[in-house]
Length: 484
Image 1 (cartoon, one colour):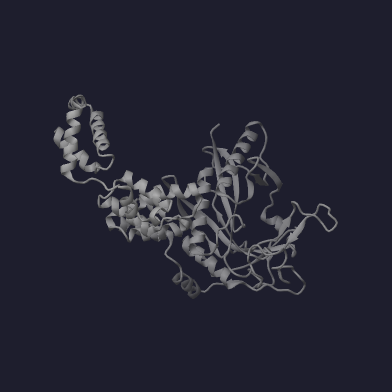
Image 2 (spheres, rainbow, N blue to C red):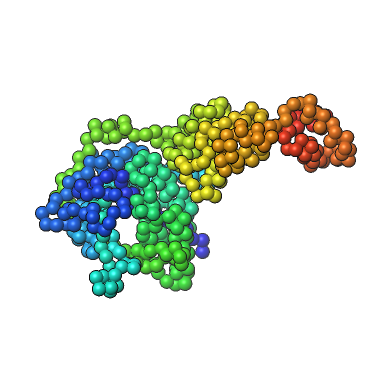
């Protein structure tokens, strides 16, 4: 049977406020356990929540960035469940009226553009953390520790419609969302510290059927690569289970990266199981139009706006513009490179950033902000290609030397020291061509007999005679003229 995968993602984005969503405790990561939890976070009697204005503004900013409706009135509910790291025995969240409603996100999967619609994005508080592994009690016994530093940390939970149909698409969406929230400055995006966590709802159905299958939820995946692998495994598991006569059970599962498999964690609850009801300690959240306008006025240029500008003003393809705006650091780097180039050569700048530079950064596992080659130096290198000083092939050699810090990364100094200046003297090139034609009459006859490969062979002989330094365009042009 031909199966179709149906995927929806729920992403918990930790907002970049200095204090928690309903208390003034710090959100700084890495503090000693239970040193950043006050009476509100520990749910001591008489403590009352106070809304963090900064968390609301970050939610508004996200809503504006994805073209969503910002609710003028939203409310907080108590989501009731018991777990040791949740001292109140409920989580303050939003259900019936979230602050952000609708919206969409555009991104590329390969060279295909996709649009995924968002259901909602709502504010909520994080729970604490249970420490199970390598934790011992006061007498050396195996125990579980509770750290409440994270309890009350502000989250924006972003929920998609179940519109994704492959693990690669889900991973591309997650990357695009990660890039957007970091771009906006509402989240630091640190997945190792839990600032960006993804839950994947996965089901399968025979292709062509409209009804959804029973879904499972893969909880708290903190890597794009693991997200893709987890979804692939879970889809295979469900298909094999159904084809063997079994039934998929609605449940929450965890992904084990070492075993590359998902494992059952608990049965999946529905909303009514949590007994949601409006929080009596928090009034409705009122967002006036003037507040939205102030947030809009302070927003940076959005990736979508920058993409459009790159396409219209600089002549980039939609794909290149999208790749350059995946994150703000790359977009900023590109714009600095372009300032050092003629405007009609922006495409060449994009090619070098998305090609040679991206490959070098990947090999070194570096972010573009840590690139040893500055935008100004890369622009200088590209300028030497444009003015004919070096060829593209030579430029790659110079790039490697720049990366390694030779001559302080100066392309001009490297070109001079290595004697890489391209021969562009038409007289000198013409003389070399005459010598090659005289030395290889058989290849000349092959070309005149209609064999195009013979021409390429002659070009190679000329470049060999020039030690790779002859201008390739001039070689091709003059050779055609002489053979013509």
